[in-house]
Amino acid sequence: SESLRLGFFAGYFYYSERLNAFGCTQTAANPFICNPQIPSSVNVISESTTWNAMRLGGNTTWIFRNGLSLTTEFAWLPYANLSGADFHRLRPDLIQPVPETAIAVFNVQLEALLNYQFSPNFAAGLGARYWRIGSDGKSGAAAFPEVQAINFRTERYGGFIQLSYKFGDLRPSRY
Image (cartoon, rainbow, N blue to C red; front, side, top):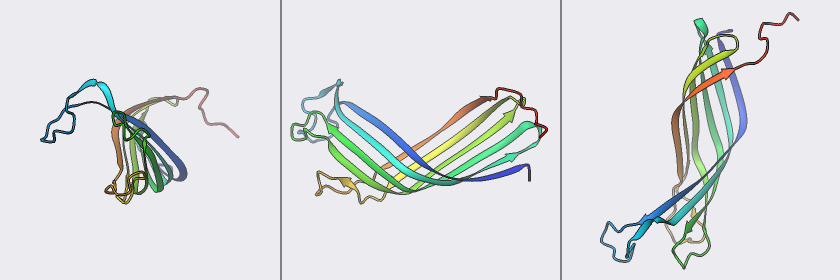
């Protein structure tokens, strides 16, 4: 039907982030941590992570009357690999960054967009998306095998506004 379009895709996903922690204040009873207090102007820990993944998924577009449409996308990431490093900037026993690795086991990306076609050239839409990539808890810091395994998880969600303009004559061709 012209009011419903289905699609399938395969692709690659790359996501990288770096987080920094500044300062340290002791809030518990351990006298050996943050004693004396470290000011919030000092970068004490940095964490960098990079996910590489394969994506398999599908999408649908429902076209309604009066220029309104709804597009949805679902992606499963059957294989995702995390490589990261943990930098403890004030610990002399950890001069080198601590490497971290993981293979993710439950991974999904979802997106929906409600779109309105104002003219053949101009459209506007409101959308939402959600990403989740997580490991199985059997991964960890390679430099510290005696440390408890780490369960890595990255989740992102949010809304967006999308505007699009198509240049050129968009009348149907007569071929």
